[in-house]
Length: 414
Ligand SMILES: Nc1ncnc2c1ncn2[C@@H]1O[C@H](COP(=O)(O)OP(=O)(O)O)[C@@H](O)[C@H]1O
Ligand SMILES: [Mg+2]
Image (cartoon, rainbow, N blue to C red; front, side):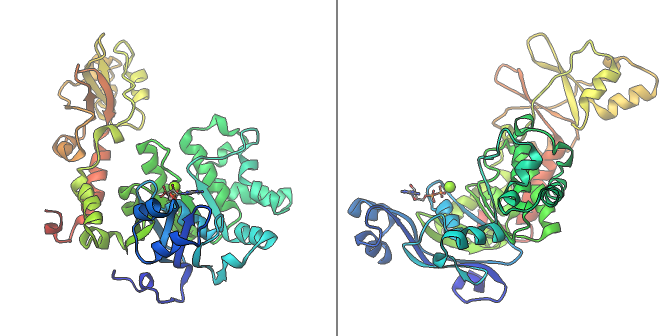
């Protein structure tokens, strides 16, 4: 495993530890189902033989102070159950859960509530914001519960909102914000009470792939500033490898492997992990439709200056014919050059030598096309424009994956 903390030794700098944790769901969790699980009977068989569901079986891991520890696994593998052990939303069937030296299973009532509030901020897939409260009040809500007075909690809330780039939206209602922004409010809410630990359960999983990547990047930037301990749960290995300092892969309630992204990629512990890893190789897994943006074509009768405004931060926008097929492309560079020469005629700035691709193409097929720096037209079988693919995004994606793989023996993937 290449990591002492994963092997059961207590380390000074660890903040969360699960020791031999079992969780059985059913009327008699400590009965036969537990004995079966404990003697290594797989989850499916335990269920068949006892009618009980194995949530976790002999789970051991520790999270170091200041790291992003990602638990990754398919749906039903036990990720949420594991995180609920840390904040004691569930009791364990067997085992020990230590958070900052405290045995959380021994906590109850107000002690437990206080411990949660002080130590942990939580962010979940579903934003769970109060729709009728302003953003700033949503963010400060936890502090209000802690009876922090208004001016102090507003200050903390504004600070947290600044961290996630939403200070300007403090007076808005959640419904006025996009999904990505709402999730950032959720993150700000978790940060507002300045907890040591952030528990994030599929926090970005409901977001569009593009927004999701932005959120991942932002979270890492924030983390570089605030140095929390983050226990992050995802079913997406790409996400896990991108943001995790270490990744714990789970299957059927059990831990399969714990390691750095590099270790997971180069030394998959089992065939199961290796199969996952294969998909990450070379960006093969990333499809165009996952990262393309809405096409928003430019009407060809616009003036050049109006058209340029619509290009905004994207590499270029397409003009379509009456049937919705892309015929030309306006890039910011071409448009600005034409403007510089005194023209306000859109047609003078358009080019037709752009590339097309299918939404089902994979990013590595488009590396060469992306190298030209022009937006790629994503078209369906009829040739209708369905997306706009920013070449910079492809270079970035491929760059990341290659960086990850760079320097490792490529034979692993063959
Ligand atoms: N409250 C519950 N009652 C019964 N079974 C549960 C309960 N919570 C989770 N499970 C079961 O435990 C297993 C792990 O679930 P969960 O931790 O939610 O998985 P994940 O978060 O990885 O999708 C699944 O088989 C699930 O059906
Ligand atoms: Mg879950």
